[in-house]
Length: 315
Image (cartoon, rainbow, N blue to C red; front, side, top):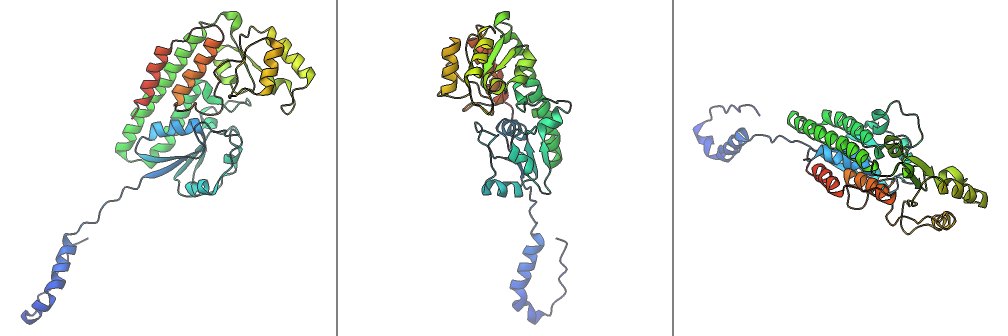
């Protein structure tokens, strides 16, 4: 507010105007506060939410629509989600049709398919791209680039530092993973799972992938002919165990276990999101160690814990 000029006043009016003059003086000294509204960013998918929160720190409010361990494939927008989207400055989702509901979001707010920007040349049909840590690092770069215009200069500097460390940690996870898979005997480097959700992991580390339900059934129905084909391929693959994606184990998985003679691994893999109470790095190292230990290798858990701690320390 600019300076208030008070004209000369007749002496007899001064007592009557004293309260008014005092108010004007106070107004002149009053300075309007500077508001710094926190930007709202909606991250729809579980893994992407962890990446976004790690990068944003306290500079933005990150609203996650799908629980960390939720299933993105069957997700449907709720009224509360629509309200969050209406208040957002930026909306992020994985892309590659991981969350079909996200493809239908419309409005004036930027809606970014992060994985599609991170992997513009990918033409496969497995949207679970983060199972290769290199893809997660590329997603970090995209998220940081989209967050930057929403932040102040000081916040941008901190964002850049967090992104640099996040990419460094994810690259370290990738190299650590290679060392772990190399402990598996060569003729046992195979991953037998229910669905095709780990192609990015198996392609990165040179494992054979057998997807029992996606490759041998129609609509998830396990017919006798399908069971015979699964049994024949799994028995000759070098597999030591069958990896479930949830517990308790399904009847279909138990049936395949009986015909192949292979046990169902006691620990599941986490395909669609984060493991309970774990971060992106915690889930990645858990999945890798589950496969390595299940297939006859030996996972370095101490090194995994160091990587998890580095990720948690990003502020």
